[in-house]
Amino acid sequence: MPLLAAVAVVLGLMPLAQQASAAPTNLALNRPVTASGQELADRWGPELAVDGNAGPEGSDVAPAVHNAPDASRWSSNSADSVWIQVDLGEAATISEVNAHWGNTYPTQWSVSTSADGENWTDVVTEGAGPGVRGGWTNWTGTAEDVRYVKVTTHGRSAPWGTGLWELEVMGEAAPAPVTNLAVDRPVAASGDELPDRWGAELAVDGDSGPEGNDVPTSVHNAAEASRWSSNSADSVWIQVDLGNTAVVSEIKAHWGNTWDCCTSW
Ligand SMILES: [Ca+2]
Ligand SMILES: [Ca+2]
Image (cartoon, rainbow, N blue to C red):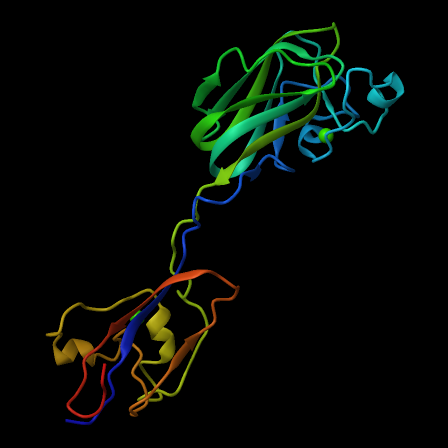
């Protein structure tokens, strides 16, 4: 029997799931929004409620400022109940919804959330509280598995479109799923046993091969066996390029058979 080096047949790299201790951030910032409508077709669209510009503070904002064409607020369609909805992009746990109202503000406002944009849960039906002319009002609590947040108003202080300078949704994005970052990535290695088979790329092809220490030789040595078979040496190496920097939490190696000579794994 030839003296052949043993091999790894699968190499996995897992990114570390983010810990839940991250400080809440504004997950609504610059995210896609939709709304019940807007006062004017060419200005004060709902996207201005999530642009990070909260506008002026106070109940005595000059009309020239409030009504400036570039005022960074959403001005809704003229109705007693209007809504604005933001897509956070991925599931999150939210802890706060902050709304900075304009000169026309709601009598009450409510918050509902959804994981899919179709099935909604009322976080507060009424009683996020009355709006405040030119000021912030807040809902605080905990809502999980939230991708979409909708704010609905109930009543208004004046017969014009409700103004919303800024809407913040504070929370933490759900941890990214743990995935194998090595799959099908470029590899390099110290060498191969044979020039025409069992190359290093087979250690990152996602096929982890058979389990156990009694794999038949015919399977292990099949020409299409999905394993890297290294050069015959006591120390060999394989290297994978993940493509981007990542936080790695786990490295898994699935080894093959060894013959009676030379390897320590
Ligand atoms: Ca704004
Ligand atoms: Ca493989």
